[in-house]
Image (cartoon, rainbow, N blue to C red):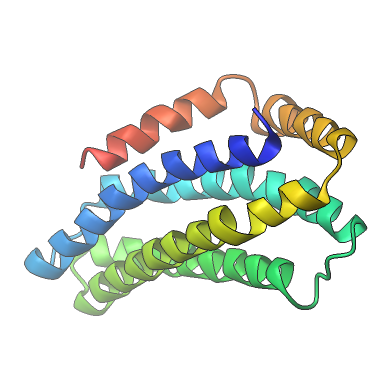
Length: 181
């Protein structure tokens, strides 16, 4: 698989989890109750897999390679993608900070959890569409075969050295658990 195919595959895994998160948001809005265990697992998935593994590959490797080929970090697609990543992290922080009070029944915190999860889910759906539809095709045009080979090796290194052996598979399973919620 090419580096962008690897990232697109990870997007599919992320979208499985997002579907479950969206169902939890609907449940929260309907019942006023937060499934704290589910939300904690969703936060773990997002922080470890979506951000710690997937976004790390993009930010540390793909985006840098594209920058070396002339794309700006300050404007254009890379600036948009980086801003999206930061907005996603902010939404997850809101959810994480509100979760204890929401679990205790605080209505304002329950709303904050639902709103944060909803914002994250919509952001990621839009973000993935931009990457799959615009950024990755652009990357495939800009990057040489040697760049692609180097990126694939760098992605493997993220998996083995930063994420850890077996972690990717664990979070694929968690995505499907979340998606079945």
